[in-house]
Image (tube, rainbow, N blue to C red):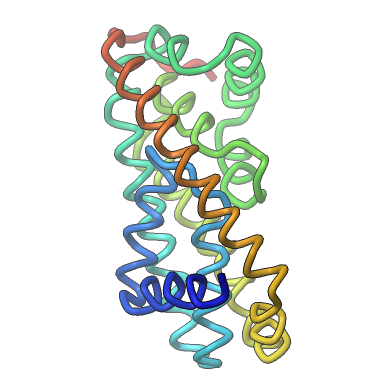
Length: 209
């Protein structure tokens, strides 16, 4: 188990910032990978103990997240509320829609900085479907995500040695393997549902302030 965890971490680290970029794109669009980028930014920064490297990791994670949001924005902006209703349960749709209509920027900021299980993608879907301006959406998400990853990076710089010792704990490694399994299964379900529901999407009304 320990060896498998080390192999997986080595695989991600071998791609460095590019790995963070790709994971950020997938996590913010189709896949289910809670804390994926957070854990990688912390682990990579703790290993390097270097401020410029930390900022690079935070920036690559942020860019990936913004690009992932763009992948969500394009189809939902076209599909509008009709498409949104096919992807969210009535209860979640009502909550997300209410928050986005009341104050889209704040709803996006909270969704971007809050950790799981707070939903992120549903707020992007709702903002796009309700025609919140694309440029503003990407700027708000980008700024909030950069703050999130930078704060995590600073914590990793301050407590890097302790984090690395903690990461070598058997229980923590078992947890990471379990998280990987959950993410894999969740991603398969998420992609399947995304494709199935996207086949029934249709065009849309303007954003209401």
